[in-house]
Amino acid sequence: AKVFKMAQRLNAPDGGSKKNSTVRVAVRLRPYMNRQDEKGEGPCVRGLDSQNLEIINWRNATETVKYHFDAFHGEQTSQQEVFLSSVKPILPHILNGQNASVFAYGPTGAGKTHTMLGTREQPGVIPRAVREVFNLVNAKDEDEGWDYRIGMSYLEIYNEKVLDLLSPSSQDLPIREDKDKNILIPGLTNTTISSFSDFDKHFVPATLNRTTASTKLNQRSSRSHAILLIKVVRTQRTVPHRQQTGKLYLVDLAGSEDNRRTGNQGIRLKESGAINLSLFALSKVVDALNSATAGRVPYRDSKLTRLLQDSLGGSAHSVMITNIAPEYKYYFDTFTALNFAAKSKLVVNKPFTRETVAVPVLPAKRPREEHEGGGSGSA
Ligand code: ADP
Ligand code: MG
Image (cartoon, rainbow, N blue to C red):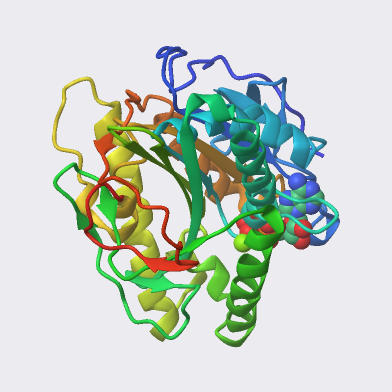
């Protein structure tokens, strides 16, 4: 095993500033796996404490480079701990008409899907967050005078195409912006859900569809961005029937590995181009948000950043969980991922509440399924 020695350069790229930022940058290191380390080299990255980790410096293997983040989750960290520290605190905001996003970033094999989805025994962020949203809504005091409706959409961005996973036969959907700068996808299925099991009923088959397709189409799940949207619309029971919409995006990003090194050809190469485009756009957006001078934020450079526009930077509570793996074969991808994450630390979000006045709500029957449109007050 390699010897770790602390490098002199302890300058974490985030500089430790921006303590008031509502963007939380967490790194999660998955457990070391023997089968991922054929040469038996041992791990090349390890945690130091709850905020710091170090990785061997490839220029000088006796040195390490140290990184500082809002949170570092070591290999022993449970799914529950990740949820409690990085996700649960932002959820109350979506009941107040604010937006939030949680995204898992990192190379294929580093634990993004484990973190977001998990297993039946070890459920990840998605099932835990959905349960918590229902808990929060159910705990609301009737006397506050709001009615809540929870809806879900589930989509995939694959080769720069937006595909509705709740309506698998649908074609590439357009992304639009309304006059209040809300991003919406006309035609995207938005299904009202009344409980966690109701959510599961719609989500599980859609996820299975995606997994089946992935084995057929060669790991499609690592080559597309899977995006779950939970929308909470609350409407005041009395005049003026104020209405607020809060959106929560839960995103399992495509693998961030450098596809040029894996010698992809044909369809794989086209996919790689789309992934590189969108993840590069994401890093540019993050950089633009980081820079002190308010320049143009290039949200329009990819479908992913366009979609996240109202939920990353400026108006939202965002959490990025960067997943990394400890084995040497991931070394350069880990380095890239850490540098991406360290930059993101500087994103500044200024949360504000979205509010519109709704047309008086008639106590009519509510459709179980509806489609998003450009209608008043919906986002
Ligand atoms: P990704 O979605 O980033 O490609 P996965 O979530 O599929 O990665 O994880 C790759 C493998 O590592 C899977 O077998 C998964 O079960 C395992 N794994 C990932 N993270 C953890 C963890 N924190 N604890 C235990 N096993 C993990
Ligand atoms: Mg995955």
